Length: 286
Image 1: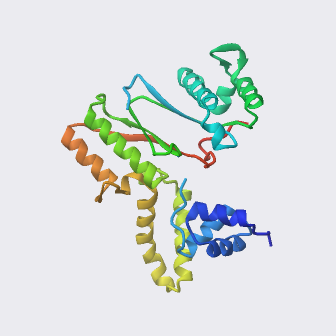
Image 2: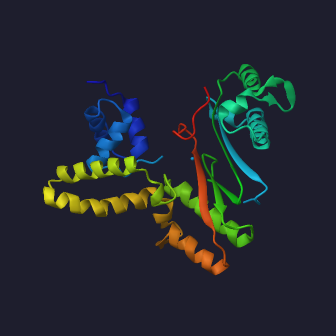
Image 3: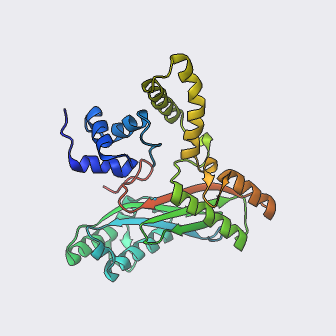
C-alpha cells in the first residue's frame, strides 16, 4: 500500500473540502492517487463534482500565469513589470497561442534575446525560480473580465451574437464572469459534456447508490435525478445564478436578451486561480 502523507491528505482536502479522515481513507482506498481519491469520495457521497481559473470585436484579452516561489517576489515592481511585458507581447502576436510559443519569441523591447532568455535573466537577478505556466487569449465578440479581490482568482469571458458593448451588455458579461469565478463550472452547456464524462459520472453515482444500500431496481431510477444535479454543478448555463438563485444562468441570459433585444451567447470562458496547475486544455511550457 502506498504511504499516505499529510501533504497528500491536505491536497485532497483542498480539492474537495472533505474532512481530513475522509480524505485519508479515500486515498488509502485509491492507492494514493489524488484523482481516484476524488472519485472515491464522490462514490461515498462526501465530495461534490470535481472542479476543473469588455472590449469590442477588434480587441483582445489575455491572462498569463508566471509562477514564482514567494508572494514577496510576486508583489515586486520588477516581477509585475515582467508579467505586463509578457502579456502585452503575447496579445500583440498572432502566432502566440501557448507558453511555448511565447518563450521562443524575440523580446519586443530587446530583439537580441528571447522571452525565455529574458525570464532566465530575471531568475538570476531576483534569485527565485520562475515558470511561464499558462497563457490564454480571447478575441472577437464582446470580452469581459473579473478579478476577485486579492487577485488570486480571475476570469476571462467571450460573448458572441452581438456587436454592441453597451453598459447593459458589459454588466451582463461581468455578472456571468463573477458566476464562473464563484461556481467554477467545467462546461458552458450540457451539450459540451463528453460521453466519457457522462459515463464516468453515472458509474460514480451508481456505485454511490449501491453503497447506500439502494436496491438494484431503484439505482437506475436514481441516476436521472443525480445526473441532473451533476449537470447543475458543472454546466454554467444550468447553475443557479449567484445574484438570483431562483433563475439559472441560462434563464438569466435569456431574460436579459429579451429585455435588450439582443441574442448574446456565452462562447468561451477561461478561469485562473493561483495555485492551480494547468488543465488538459492549457498545457504548461516545457
